[in-house]
Image (cartoon, rainbow, N blue to C red; front, side, top):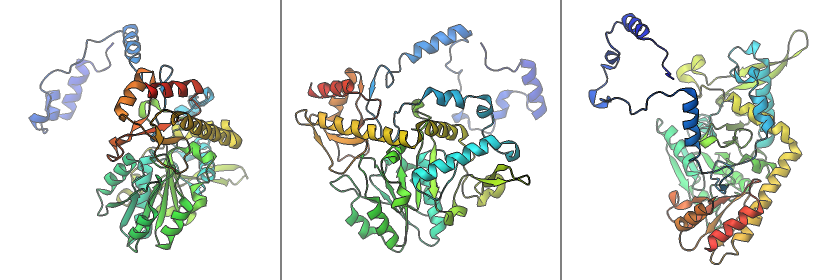
Length: 448
């Protein structure tokens, strides 16, 4: 089966239309050292049945998660059960083919879904309003820093907790590379949470914003209310990051604890892991700062007949509206991921989300209690945690992960990848998908 539909005659006529003789002429301006001087290393075309057979064969090589491997890896991407009803509703034609409301007057269903999403997430994050259209948790946090600079005006210093997920911090620094500002790092203390003394010493008049993740990259729950008080006393904004949104079924909303902007990753609701994407960026803030906020905002109104209608209230970030003066150059709507979250949260309900969070926390604490019974294994940090925690493992993390892999277990994240001083530390995540049999297998593999 060939995938390029153009005939030789089609190609000839297109080349004539643009005024060149060959396809190669289209790339004449590119230096020859950057051009491939050989044919692509591709097999001969296959018919449909042969191609399906090949893809099934390749799929069997995936052993990282799913039915054949017990999953204890989190670190920003969390394995949760997604009800079958989510995809069944999401893939209806009216949702699947029309998720970007450029023609708002004929997109009432999509606009209502965004409105419901905004309402749900505002309640969850504890903010006055929530936008739509953020790519993922990392880019949403970077956008929050740019927004903080716009709000703070003359303040230019940006403080990032070292317990912020390192890849989120890297994304923030990448965004800021096109600006004059850079970030400073606040260390974490022996408890696994931000060192408040170091934060107090670093805060000053020039600080625009402080970014704190909770639960943080070490699984520890940060004292957000105390941090917010310190940050606000210095005249700065607090940006709280939540990469595991299921925790909000149990923990107090960051907005209620004093966060000025709350960002996070929402793919745990409805989207799933999917080999790493797509994500769903969460972004909530106060009404006072709405005009500096990136993304879309949908509002509810009534028409001249008294009927409820939904309108695209704000999209000031769009290039096609403000171009160089746009608050952001995010172009997509993330509409399907947003809708998946709405469906999943609707199925859970308030009590269901609370129960799901409690199951996660209970499973994690039960697992930690079992694993520290293994000789030499101990908890690395004393701070409270939700469904992730760090173990100090004797004999080296690499050896432990190898044994766990042989036992059919994805054992977690070796933290030395991001924190060299934590060479013998292992970050585990336990969700509702991990049962007692998996935990016992984990413990036996550590004993080996």
